Length: 467
Image 1: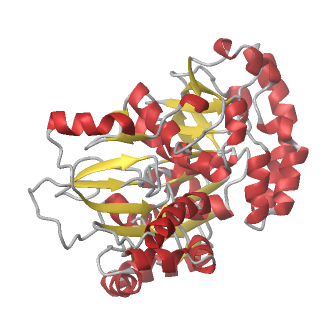
Image 2: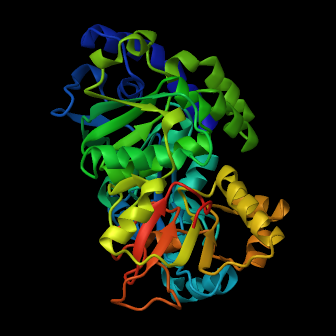
Protein backbone atom coordinates (compact mmCIF):
# COMPACT_ATOMS: atom_id res chain seq x y z
CA UNK A 1 0.00 0.00 0.00
CA UNK A 2 2.77 2.48 0.91
CA UNK A 3 4.49 1.61 -2.38
CA UNK A 4 1.44 2.65 -4.40
CA UNK A 5 0.98 5.80 -2.35
CA UNK A 6 4.62 6.74 -2.86
CA UNK A 7 4.53 6.08 -6.63
CA UNK A 8 1.47 8.27 -7.10
CA UNK A 9 2.88 11.03 -4.89
CA UNK A 10 6.32 11.13 -6.54
CA UNK A 11 4.72 11.17 -10.00
CA UNK A 12 2.82 14.39 -9.32
CA UNK A 13 5.49 16.18 -7.30
CA UNK A 14 7.62 17.72 -10.13
CA UNK A 15 4.72 19.60 -11.70
CA UNK A 16 3.37 21.01 -8.44
CA UNK A 17 6.90 21.99 -7.32
CA UNK A 18 7.34 24.07 -10.47
CA UNK A 19 4.04 25.78 -9.78
CA UNK A 20 5.06 26.47 -6.21
CA UNK A 21 8.50 27.86 -7.08
CA UNK A 22 6.89 30.21 -9.58
CA UNK A 23 4.12 31.34 -7.22
CA UNK A 24 6.39 31.72 -4.16
CA UNK A 25 9.24 33.24 -6.14
CA UNK A 26 11.83 31.14 -4.33
CA UNK A 27 13.21 27.60 -3.98
CA UNK A 28 11.41 25.10 -1.73
CA UNK A 29 12.26 23.67 1.66
CA UNK A 30 11.41 20.04 2.36
CA UNK A 31 8.37 21.08 4.42
CA UNK A 32 7.22 23.25 1.51
CA UNK A 33 7.49 20.30 -0.85
CA UNK A 34 5.43 17.96 1.28
CA UNK A 35 2.75 20.54 2.00
CA UNK A 36 2.26 21.74 -1.59
CA UNK A 37 2.18 18.17 -2.93
CA UNK A 38 -0.68 17.35 -0.56
CA UNK A 39 -2.77 20.46 -1.16
CA UNK A 40 -6.45 19.82 -1.83
CA UNK A 41 -6.31 22.54 -4.50
CA UNK A 42 -2.94 24.21 -4.98
CA UNK A 43 -4.28 26.91 -7.32
CA UNK A 44 -6.83 28.30 -4.85
CA UNK A 45 -4.78 27.76 -1.69
CA UNK A 46 -3.31 30.74 0.21
CA UNK A 47 0.26 29.92 1.33
CA UNK A 48 1.11 32.58 3.91
CA UNK A 49 2.98 31.01 6.81
CA UNK A 50 1.46 31.62 10.22
CA UNK A 51 -1.80 33.02 8.78
CA UNK A 52 -3.29 30.86 6.03
CA UNK A 53 -5.44 27.83 6.71
CA UNK A 54 -4.27 24.91 4.61
CA UNK A 55 -6.61 22.31 3.15
CA UNK A 56 -4.56 19.13 2.72
CA UNK A 57 -5.08 15.53 1.64
CA UNK A 58 -3.17 13.19 3.99
CA UNK A 59 -1.91 9.86 2.69
CA UNK A 60 -2.85 7.97 5.83
CA UNK A 61 -4.61 8.10 9.22
CA UNK A 62 -3.30 6.30 12.34
CA UNK A 63 -5.25 6.00 15.60
CA UNK A 64 -4.40 4.65 19.05
CA UNK A 65 -7.12 2.80 20.94
CA UNK A 66 -7.93 5.47 23.53
CA UNK A 67 -8.66 8.12 20.90
CA UNK A 68 -9.79 5.81 18.11
CA UNK A 69 -13.08 5.10 19.86
CA UNK A 70 -14.46 8.61 19.36
CA UNK A 71 -12.77 9.04 15.98
CA UNK A 72 -14.44 5.88 14.66
CA UNK A 73 -17.82 6.84 16.13
CA UNK A 74 -17.57 10.23 14.43
CA UNK A 75 -16.56 8.61 11.15
CA UNK A 76 -19.57 6.30 11.34
CA UNK A 77 -21.88 9.33 11.27
CA UNK A 78 -20.75 9.99 7.70
CA UNK A 79 -22.51 6.78 6.56
CA UNK A 80 -19.54 5.74 4.43
CA UNK A 81 -18.96 2.09 3.58
CA UNK A 82 -15.16 2.32 3.70
CA UNK A 83 -12.55 4.70 5.01
CA UNK A 84 -11.57 7.09 2.20
CA UNK A 85 -7.83 6.86 2.97
CA UNK A 86 -5.68 4.02 4.31
CA UNK A 87 -6.22 3.97 8.08
CA UNK A 88 -5.09 1.87 11.04
CA UNK A 89 -6.00 1.35 14.70
CA UNK A 90 -3.28 0.45 17.22
CA UNK A 91 -4.24 -1.00 20.63
CA UNK A 92 -1.35 0.27 22.73
CA UNK A 93 -2.67 2.82 25.23
CA UNK A 94 -5.01 0.82 27.46
CA UNK A 95 -2.48 -1.70 28.78
CA UNK A 96 -1.32 -0.95 32.34
CA UNK A 97 2.22 -1.91 33.33
CA UNK A 98 2.35 -3.68 36.70
CA UNK A 99 3.01 -7.43 36.78
CA UNK A 100 4.98 -8.06 33.61
CA UNK A 101 4.15 -8.39 29.94
CA UNK A 102 2.08 -11.59 29.89
CA UNK A 103 -0.07 -10.85 32.94
CA UNK A 104 -0.54 -7.19 32.01
CA UNK A 105 -1.72 -8.12 28.53
CA UNK A 106 -4.11 -10.78 29.84
CA UNK A 107 -5.64 -8.28 32.26
CA UNK A 108 -5.94 -5.62 29.55
CA UNK A 109 -7.75 -8.04 27.24
CA UNK A 110 -10.25 -8.70 30.03
CA UNK A 111 -10.70 -5.13 31.29
CA UNK A 112 -10.95 -3.57 27.83
CA UNK A 113 -12.76 -6.38 26.05
CA UNK A 114 -15.69 -4.19 25.00
CA UNK A 115 -13.41 -1.50 23.57
CA UNK A 116 -11.21 -3.96 21.68
CA UNK A 117 -14.23 -5.81 20.26
CA UNK A 118 -15.78 -2.57 19.07
CA UNK A 119 -12.57 -1.35 17.42
CA UNK A 120 -11.82 -4.73 15.82
CA UNK A 121 -15.32 -5.09 14.40
CA UNK A 122 -15.42 -1.48 13.16
CA UNK A 123 -12.03 -1.92 11.53
CA UNK A 124 -13.23 -5.03 9.72
CA UNK A 125 -16.41 -3.34 8.55
CA UNK A 126 -14.80 -0.14 7.27
CA UNK A 127 -11.57 -1.52 5.81
CA UNK A 128 -9.33 -0.18 8.56
CA UNK A 129 -6.15 -1.98 9.61
CA UNK A 130 -6.24 -3.36 13.17
CA UNK A 131 -3.16 -3.93 15.31
CA UNK A 132 -4.15 -6.04 18.29
CA UNK A 133 -3.09 -5.36 21.90
CA UNK A 134 0.58 -6.22 22.37
CA UNK A 135 1.48 -5.72 18.69
CA UNK A 136 3.38 -2.53 19.38
CA UNK A 137 3.24 1.19 20.08
CA UNK A 138 1.45 3.15 17.37
CA UNK A 139 4.39 5.38 16.42
CA UNK A 140 6.94 2.58 16.20
CA UNK A 141 4.56 0.41 14.16
CA UNK A 142 3.90 3.30 11.77
CA UNK A 143 7.65 3.91 11.37
CA UNK A 144 8.32 0.24 10.68
CA UNK A 145 5.43 -0.33 8.29
CA UNK A 146 3.70 2.75 6.91
CA UNK A 147 5.75 5.96 6.93
CA UNK A 148 7.73 6.78 3.80
CA UNK A 149 9.76 9.75 2.54
CA UNK A 150 7.55 12.64 1.46
CA UNK A 151 4.34 11.31 3.02
CA UNK A 152 1.75 13.24 5.00
CA UNK A 153 0.26 11.22 7.87
CA UNK A 154 -2.13 12.37 10.59
CA UNK A 155 -2.47 10.43 13.83
CA UNK A 156 -4.62 10.77 16.92
CA UNK A 157 -1.66 11.04 19.28
CA UNK A 158 0.73 13.90 20.04
CA UNK A 159 3.87 11.88 19.23
CA UNK A 160 2.77 10.99 15.71
CA UNK A 161 5.72 13.15 14.43
CA UNK A 162 7.89 10.06 15.03
CA UNK A 163 7.27 9.39 11.33
CA UNK A 164 9.49 12.35 10.47
CA UNK A 165 12.39 9.97 11.00
CA UNK A 166 11.60 8.60 7.53
CA UNK A 167 11.34 11.98 5.86
CA UNK A 168 7.59 12.56 6.00
CA UNK A 169 5.33 15.02 7.79
CA UNK A 170 3.48 13.06 10.47
CA UNK A 171 1.18 15.24 12.55
CA UNK A 172 -0.83 14.62 15.71
CA UNK A 173 -4.52 15.63 15.48
CA UNK A 174 -7.81 15.31 17.30
CA UNK A 175 -10.24 12.50 16.67
CA UNK A 176 -12.64 14.73 14.75
CA UNK A 177 -9.91 15.57 12.23
CA UNK A 178 -9.18 11.88 11.72
CA UNK A 179 -12.86 11.09 11.29
CA UNK A 180 -13.30 13.79 8.65
CA UNK A 181 -10.31 12.63 6.63
CA UNK A 182 -11.51 9.03 6.76
CA UNK A 183 -14.86 10.30 5.51
CA UNK A 184 -13.19 11.89 2.50
CA UNK A 185 -12.90 15.54 3.55
CA UNK A 186 -9.68 17.55 3.33
CA UNK A 187 -7.79 18.23 6.53
CA UNK A 188 -7.43 21.83 7.67
CA UNK A 189 -4.47 23.19 9.62
CA UNK A 190 -2.85 26.58 10.20
CA UNK A 191 0.07 26.98 7.79
CA UNK A 192 3.00 26.43 10.18
CA UNK A 193 6.03 28.66 10.30
CA UNK A 194 9.38 26.94 9.82
CA UNK A 195 12.33 26.43 12.16
CA UNK A 196 15.47 25.21 10.45
CA UNK A 197 17.90 23.21 12.61
CA UNK A 198 21.33 22.83 11.05
CA UNK A 199 23.27 19.86 12.38
CA UNK A 200 27.03 19.63 11.95
CA UNK A 201 29.63 17.25 13.36
CA UNK A 202 28.89 13.77 14.69
CA UNK A 203 27.66 12.39 18.01
CA UNK A 204 30.35 10.81 20.16
CA UNK A 205 30.86 9.17 23.53
CA UNK A 206 27.72 8.82 25.59
CA UNK A 207 25.76 11.34 23.52
CA UNK A 208 22.78 9.93 21.61
CA UNK A 209 20.14 11.21 19.20
CA UNK A 210 17.86 11.83 22.18
CA UNK A 211 20.30 14.47 23.44
CA UNK A 212 19.68 16.54 20.31
CA UNK A 213 16.03 17.08 21.16
CA UNK A 214 16.64 17.38 24.91
CA UNK A 215 19.10 20.19 24.19
CA UNK A 216 16.63 21.79 21.79
CA UNK A 217 13.82 21.59 24.36
CA UNK A 218 16.00 23.48 26.81
CA UNK A 219 16.85 26.07 24.17
CA UNK A 220 13.39 26.70 22.67
CA UNK A 221 11.14 25.71 25.65
CA UNK A 222 7.85 23.82 25.51
CA UNK A 223 6.21 26.67 23.58
CA UNK A 224 9.04 27.36 21.16
CA UNK A 225 7.65 25.16 18.41
CA UNK A 226 3.98 26.14 18.62
CA UNK A 227 2.44 26.34 15.12
CA UNK A 228 5.83 25.59 13.59
CA UNK A 229 7.49 22.75 11.72
CA UNK A 230 11.03 21.86 12.75
CA UNK A 231 13.07 20.90 9.69
CA UNK A 232 16.52 19.40 10.29
CA UNK A 233 19.30 19.59 7.73
CA UNK A 234 23.07 19.74 7.39
CA UNK A 235 25.88 17.15 7.27
CA UNK A 236 25.24 16.10 10.87
CA UNK A 237 21.74 14.90 9.97
CA UNK A 238 23.19 12.25 7.68
CA UNK A 239 25.16 10.70 10.57
CA UNK A 240 22.04 9.92 12.64
CA UNK A 241 20.18 6.64 12.13
CA UNK A 242 16.59 6.64 10.91
CA UNK A 243 15.38 5.49 14.32
CA UNK A 244 17.50 8.21 15.93
CA UNK A 245 15.83 10.71 13.63
CA UNK A 246 12.47 9.26 14.69
CA UNK A 247 13.39 9.81 18.35
CA UNK A 248 14.20 13.45 17.67
CA UNK A 249 11.01 14.04 15.66
CA UNK A 250 8.88 12.15 18.20
CA UNK A 251 9.82 14.59 20.92
CA UNK A 252 9.31 17.66 18.79
CA UNK A 253 5.88 17.41 20.40
CA UNK A 254 7.52 18.56 23.64
CA UNK A 255 8.39 21.79 21.86
CA UNK A 256 4.74 22.25 20.95
CA UNK A 257 5.74 21.85 17.30
CA UNK A 258 3.20 20.92 14.65
CA UNK A 259 5.70 18.30 13.49
CA UNK A 260 9.38 17.71 12.67
CA UNK A 261 11.12 16.22 9.65
CA UNK A 262 14.50 15.08 8.33
CA UNK A 263 15.50 15.02 4.63
CA UNK A 264 15.75 11.69 2.85
CA UNK A 265 19.18 10.04 3.06
CA UNK A 266 21.05 6.73 3.08
CA UNK A 267 20.14 6.01 6.72
CA UNK A 268 16.47 5.90 5.69
CA UNK A 269 17.33 3.56 2.82
CA UNK A 270 19.07 1.26 5.28
CA UNK A 271 16.10 1.28 7.67
CA UNK A 272 13.45 0.65 5.01
CA UNK A 273 15.56 -2.18 3.62
CA UNK A 274 15.98 -3.89 6.99
CA UNK A 275 12.23 -3.52 7.68
CA UNK A 276 11.37 -5.40 4.46
CA UNK A 277 10.69 -2.37 2.25
CA UNK A 278 13.67 -2.51 -0.13
CA UNK A 279 11.48 -1.71 -3.17
CA UNK A 280 10.21 1.43 -1.46
CA UNK A 281 13.77 2.40 -0.54
CA UNK A 282 14.87 2.07 -4.19
CA UNK A 283 11.91 4.14 -5.36
CA UNK A 284 12.76 6.90 -2.89
CA UNK A 285 16.43 6.80 -3.96
CA UNK A 286 15.39 7.34 -7.55
CA UNK A 287 13.42 10.41 -6.47
CA UNK A 288 15.82 11.83 -3.89
CA UNK A 289 15.70 15.37 -5.33
CA UNK A 290 11.97 15.48 -4.59
CA UNK A 291 12.51 14.45 -0.96
CA UNK A 292 15.08 17.01 0.12
CA UNK A 293 15.11 20.80 0.16
CA UNK A 294 16.20 22.56 -3.04
CA UNK A 295 19.99 23.08 -3.19
CA UNK A 296 19.55 26.88 -3.08
CA UNK A 297 17.89 26.56 0.32
CA UNK A 298 20.92 24.78 1.74
CA UNK A 299 23.24 27.47 0.37
CA UNK A 300 21.47 30.29 2.25
CA UNK A 301 19.04 28.74 4.76
CA UNK A 302 18.55 32.00 6.66
CA UNK A 303 16.55 33.29 3.68
CA UNK A 304 14.01 30.48 3.71
CA UNK A 305 13.40 29.54 7.35
CA UNK A 306 11.67 31.78 9.87
CA UNK A 307 14.24 30.82 12.50
CA UNK A 308 17.61 29.05 12.38
CA UNK A 309 19.24 26.98 15.14
CA UNK A 310 22.69 25.44 14.76
CA UNK A 311 23.89 22.42 16.76
CA UNK A 312 27.38 20.96 16.58
CA UNK A 313 26.82 17.29 17.39
CA UNK A 314 30.51 16.84 18.17
CA UNK A 315 30.18 19.20 21.13
CA UNK A 316 26.83 17.90 22.39
CA UNK A 317 26.98 16.41 25.88
CA UNK A 318 24.58 13.80 27.29
CA UNK A 319 21.56 15.65 28.70
CA UNK A 320 18.90 15.08 31.34
CA UNK A 321 15.66 17.06 31.51
CA UNK A 322 13.15 17.54 34.30
CA UNK A 323 11.70 17.06 36.76
CA UNK A 324 8.13 17.72 35.63
CA UNK A 325 8.90 19.45 32.33
CA UNK A 326 10.93 18.59 29.23
CA UNK A 327 12.49 22.06 28.88
CA UNK A 328 14.35 22.05 32.22
CA UNK A 329 17.52 20.79 30.56
CA UNK A 330 21.14 20.48 31.57
CA UNK A 331 24.15 18.30 30.68
CA UNK A 332 24.30 15.28 32.96
CA UNK A 333 27.65 16.60 34.24
CA UNK A 334 25.75 19.43 35.96
CA UNK A 335 22.94 17.34 37.45
CA UNK A 336 24.68 16.38 40.70
CA UNK A 337 25.27 19.96 41.80
CA UNK A 338 21.76 20.99 40.82
CA UNK A 339 20.18 18.04 42.63
CA UNK A 340 22.03 19.00 45.82
CA UNK A 341 21.14 22.66 45.44
CA UNK A 342 17.43 22.09 44.81
CA UNK A 343 16.99 19.13 47.13
CA UNK A 344 16.00 16.51 44.58
CA UNK A 345 15.84 12.97 46.02
CA UNK A 346 19.18 11.61 44.87
CA UNK A 347 18.43 7.91 45.28
CA UNK A 348 16.88 6.59 42.08
CA UNK A 349 13.88 4.38 42.76
CA UNK A 350 13.13 3.21 39.23
CA UNK A 351 14.28 3.38 35.62
CA UNK A 352 12.30 3.11 32.39
CA UNK A 353 13.86 1.86 29.15
CA UNK A 354 12.24 1.76 25.72
CA UNK A 355 8.86 3.21 24.60
CA UNK A 356 7.99 4.62 21.18
CA UNK A 357 10.85 7.11 21.65
CA UNK A 358 13.84 4.99 22.60
CA UNK A 359 13.25 1.33 21.81
CA UNK A 360 15.13 0.92 18.58
CA UNK A 361 17.75 -1.82 18.25
CA UNK A 362 20.39 0.90 18.54
CA UNK A 363 19.07 2.09 21.91
CA UNK A 364 18.30 -1.30 23.38
CA UNK A 365 21.67 -2.74 22.38
CA UNK A 366 23.46 0.03 24.27
CA UNK A 367 21.39 -0.65 27.37
CA UNK A 368 22.02 -4.37 27.06
CA UNK A 369 25.76 -3.79 26.71
CA UNK A 370 25.83 -1.87 30.00
CA UNK A 371 23.73 -4.60 31.63
CA UNK A 372 26.19 -7.25 30.38
CA UNK A 373 29.09 -5.34 31.92
CA UNK A 374 27.20 -5.10 35.21
CA UNK A 375 26.51 -8.83 35.24
CA UNK A 376 30.14 -9.58 34.43
CA UNK A 377 31.13 -7.51 37.45
CA UNK A 378 28.72 -9.51 39.62
CA UNK A 379 26.22 -6.67 40.07
CA UNK A 380 22.45 -6.62 40.34
CA UNK A 381 20.16 -3.63 39.80
CA UNK A 382 19.45 -1.76 43.05
CA UNK A 383 16.46 0.08 41.58
CA UNK A 384 13.58 -1.54 39.75
CA UNK A 385 13.63 -1.06 36.00
CA UNK A 386 11.03 -1.67 33.34
CA UNK A 387 11.68 -2.36 29.66
CA UNK A 388 8.98 -1.42 27.12
CA UNK A 389 9.72 -2.70 23.58
CA UNK A 390 8.20 -0.54 20.86
CA UNK A 391 6.90 -3.41 18.73
CA UNK A 392 6.78 -7.14 18.21
CA UNK A 393 9.65 -6.79 15.74
CA UNK A 394 11.83 -5.13 18.38
CA UNK A 395 10.80 -7.63 21.07
CA UNK A 396 11.75 -10.64 18.95
CA UNK A 397 15.01 -9.01 17.85
CA UNK A 398 15.86 -8.45 21.52
CA UNK A 399 15.02 -12.08 22.25
CA UNK A 400 17.07 -13.33 19.30
CA UNK A 401 20.19 -11.49 20.46
CA UNK A 402 19.90 -12.42 24.13
CA UNK A 403 18.95 -8.95 25.39
CA UNK A 404 15.82 -10.25 27.13
CA UNK A 405 17.83 -12.73 29.16
CA UNK A 406 20.46 -10.12 30.01
CA UNK A 407 17.95 -7.61 31.34
CA UNK A 408 16.07 -10.25 33.31
CA UNK A 409 19.28 -11.51 34.96
CA UNK A 410 20.06 -7.97 36.05
CA UNK A 411 16.61 -7.64 37.62
CA UNK A 412 14.55 -5.98 34.89
CA UNK A 413 10.88 -6.59 34.16
CA UNK A 414 9.25 -6.51 30.76
CA UNK A 415 6.21 -4.45 29.96
CA UNK A 416 4.03 -5.36 26.99
CA UNK A 417 4.73 -3.67 23.67
CA UNK A 418 2.63 -0.66 24.67
CA UNK A 419 2.73 2.99 25.70
CA UNK A 420 2.39 2.00 29.39
CA UNK A 421 4.34 4.29 31.79
CA UNK A 422 4.84 6.92 29.09
CA UNK A 423 1.17 7.91 29.43
CA UNK A 424 0.75 7.17 33.15
CA UNK A 425 -0.30 3.53 32.65
CA UNK A 426 2.03 2.25 35.34
CA UNK A 427 1.17 0.88 38.75
CA UNK A 428 4.36 1.08 40.77
CA UNK A 429 4.52 -1.29 43.70
CA UNK A 430 6.93 0.98 45.55
CA UNK A 431 5.31 4.31 44.69
CA UNK A 432 3.70 6.28 47.49
CA UNK A 433 1.23 8.98 46.47
CA UNK A 434 2.37 12.39 47.63
CA UNK A 435 5.90 11.26 48.48
CA UNK A 436 8.59 12.58 46.17
CA UNK A 437 11.15 10.21 44.76
CA UNK A 438 13.25 10.15 41.61
CA UNK A 439 13.11 7.95 38.56
CA UNK A 440 15.09 8.19 35.31
CA UNK A 441 13.36 7.50 32.03
CA UNK A 442 14.22 7.26 28.34
CA UNK A 443 10.54 7.83 27.49
CA UNK A 444 9.13 11.09 26.13
CA UNK A 445 6.58 12.71 28.47
CA UNK A 446 7.81 13.60 31.96
CA UNK A 447 5.24 16.17 33.12
CA UNK A 448 4.15 16.09 36.75
CA UNK A 449 1.66 13.28 37.38
CA UNK A 450 2.31 12.08 33.83
CA UNK A 451 4.73 9.20 34.18
CA UNK A 452 3.65 8.53 37.73
CA UNK A 453 2.03 10.82 40.26
CA UNK A 454 4.29 9.89 43.14
CA UNK A 455 7.55 10.44 41.31
CA UNK A 456 9.85 13.24 40.21
CA UNK A 457 10.47 11.99 36.67
CA UNK A 458 13.75 12.89 35.02
CA UNK A 459 14.28 11.97 31.42
CA UNK A 460 17.66 11.16 29.99
CA UNK A 461 19.07 10.98 26.51
CA UNK A 462 20.30 7.52 27.36
CA UNK A 463 18.36 4.34 27.00
CA UNK A 464 19.43 3.06 30.37
CA UNK A 465 23.08 3.98 29.91
CA UNK A 466 23.25 6.01 33.11
CA UNK A 467 20.89 5.53 36.02
